[in-house]
Image (cartoon, rainbow, N blue to C red):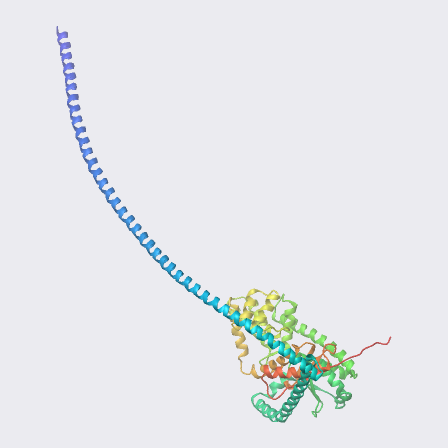
Length: 516
């Protein structure tokens, strides 16, 4: 009985629990459903609000885009309208120009027709004149028994002879007048020059004294009728002055190399004792070769003393030629060596390459002694020579820029420029007058060399005489006379010089055979 009660109680308890669970489930379910419906309603309301906001934003964006697009369209329409207006204006202008052109063409055609009509009239008159001229010429030929061509030739020959005679007479009168005034002007100019220029400096640069043992040698050097001295002057280009100066002969010329050749040649001829034109020619030719060899040796000694290596042999030869060249009265080789040493010292002090600086300093004036002098400043000419013989670009730039003809690209260039100024600006180092004098003599020789048939030219007598040697097979005697006159006119037109210059054209014919 008790057991049944317990079971019934347990069943009732279980049933109560089941009913409680069911009731709780139902209650919770209803609560959740209400909450879900509330959330959904709220979400729908929010979605509706967002939807309305987005629609409003879209409408605003659309209106904005529409407004911008309308502005662009309006702007394009305005541009199109302006273009159309311009085109209409251009069309109107073109139509106006076309009408104007058509009108001018009509006027030109009318003028052309008028000119053609006048030209026909002129041609008819020209034919009539030609006919009348032919009739007159025929009448004159019948009267004079000469053709028109023969009469014209006779008239030309007559006028040519008269003009030539008058020209020669004028030339003689002008020459005579120049002779009368030359001495007075020459004295005045010489006095002024002596007052402004130190005589020791002029002698040092233009004259070499050749000492002799006795006065008898002077006669042997002059030779029979002066043939020996003429041969020496023609072969060396140096004026040989033999005067009353005891035991001395003066060799005068602006080119130191020529003076050295003349001095050495005279020394050998006097020592040998055989002095005649053939021997003189042989000795002078041999001496020129020896001087060239000495120039090369001087260049080699210079680069060795300075510690410069791997220089092209042609540049070494040009360095040697510097010994016989002066720049504003200053010896060019001494000046270049001084600039090289100064440049090396300055470069070393500044922490640069002293070897390049020394090389550039030595070669900076190499353009002054180039054999083929171009129409270039000596700095640019020196740069071209250095480039030709494979010098370093820094060295080439320093050579070309030391007078500011080109832009300086390295620090070596201003060093060379400064050292060049230091060497040249020392008191008494340079003299402008001597350089100008040498340039004038060179210009004289260059003018004469520009004429065909000229073999050699020598400016002597301190530039007061120009001797021109021409080829006998290229220039006749008449042409030599004409060449002398043409040279005098060209020198008068192109140069400025004191006093007068005597132009002597020498034409020599040699006949040589050998007895075997």
